[in-house]
Image (tube, rainbow, N blue to C red; front, top):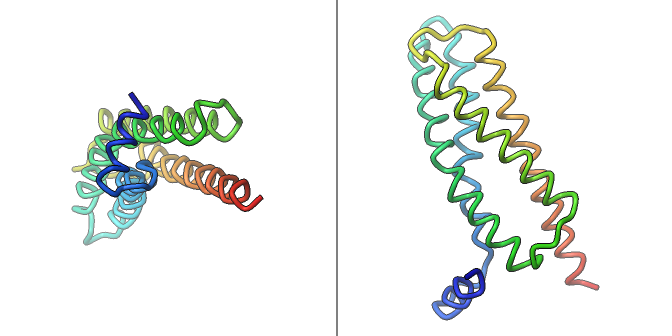
Length: 148
């Protein structure tokens, strides 16, 4: 199935990996969520907690297509080879998805407090950084292999 998808994309002129373009959805939403959550603690900006919560929901909705495209690219580019960075990305993605879902369920954006829920927001940022770093390392490996 993976090769059929990539063959079709190649025929219409799209020769790039799918995953990098989609990562901006959940990663950007996580960064926005954390920013809005923290800014909402300023006295007159409490209402921005709701915006941060909406970012969490959008980030969560973006996780499935992003993970699926990552799976397709992994199959196509790496032949499904298990290596540390792939496993790390999968673990981080699952933990991020669970954490986003937890925030979506337990957060009360109408009454933001600097509590455990805010810590969850900050943890999503750390997970996003880890995912981005490991993805960058994989890309670097590919470029190094192509040059040699």
